Image (cartoon, rainbow, N blue to C red; front, side, top):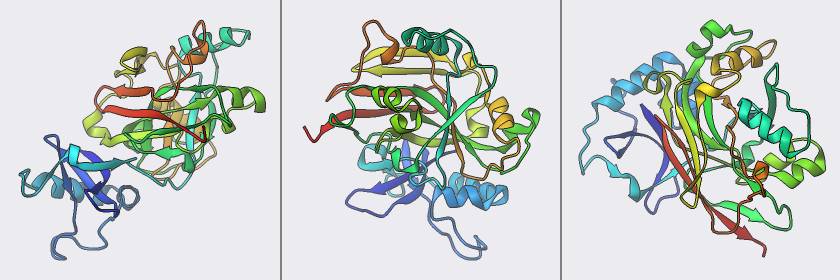
Length: 305
């Protein structure tokens, strides 16, 4: 299933929907006899409801006819981030691809060292924006806006001290995140949080692909283009720490909950590590792609200039 959070044309209310045959179907509460208990009104509510409700929702989604009367062309709806308001910060990984760890260290004149444990930081929920929404750039705050293509994991079944062998059983699905970063703020504050956390610096989407449909998370091409020019191109097979190992490490002594989002790091090719550095500018179109999910497209829009 490809679950979405969407608004129909001329509406402000957000709906839970599913994409089939490149068309959107809004998931609505059927008759009480067909759906016992509360009907999830959002994707987060669906995830939190648990596996039995997931199975019922999938059956409902698959039973709906895809026709011009019952569905909507994607170009006529607005897609929001799959989980527009996460319950917690998004957990992110730094330097989880060896080539990126090398380019980052070289660009900063640091010792080249591959991490021997996952490097975690977070982005706040206020940074989340939609798959086709603009990336706001306030030049009075940062002059070095950068991009990072990432595969994101959404937890479905919570747990603590989860083993790597069972970790993927806890995954509801996968989506795309562009971990937009203000490099000058990272350097100024000597940590990653502030520079990763500006409003609109976490484009996400275009939908959440369930784990059963997505398949092996360690065998997916991942790429990013700026104005049509490829800047990042790699495979999730290149991760230093796999999704399963990430979940195992993060959950040690720390409870993961349904709806938690983990962004798994970016491959090489980021702007600040290029010679000379290449930062995003007003009007740039950034396309972030993961095979098996799709593409998000976000244009940089200057503010307060």
